[in-house]
Image (cartoon, rainbow, N blue to C red):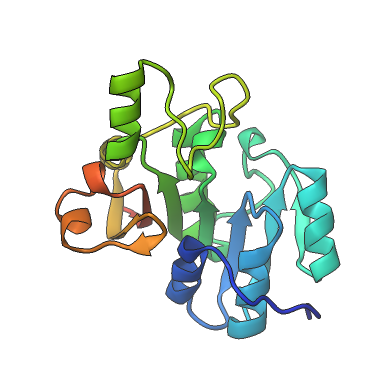
Length: 206
């Protein structure tokens, strides 16, 4: 049982935590420093672990008592049998993997429900920076230069929804955020333009 508690986590992680049922089996892909898993273990008694490739993040997970293994998601999830988890989470990581379409398929093979949060490259501030400066944009959620960014597959909300449709993936729910706040009228009316981040609950079509 983790011995450390969290005072505050990222809003998208808090919203994801709210979606998870008590006593669930959870796999967190690209779990980072383990903040979300720590919250879920402490507050919802979940069973599961994280997958992470960065050594510093893994050490942070271990210090918190969060179960984690070191693995490269791009190598696949072949070590996990079908339907071995209730939820598989991918938070702000899809844009950093080499084959996002394969990762989504694998998520829904090993888990009954997938939860994906992604940065929206269609956000109006990103569009305006690119249009006005002619250079790759930088924002609070996309703070890197083009040459040192870990993001290799930047996407928009529309792009993600198109991919889900092509892969026969059902989007059960979409939560739109803007500037670290849950979306209001405009954000929900035109999320591809006004939301800088979105959370999707996905399942295979039956």
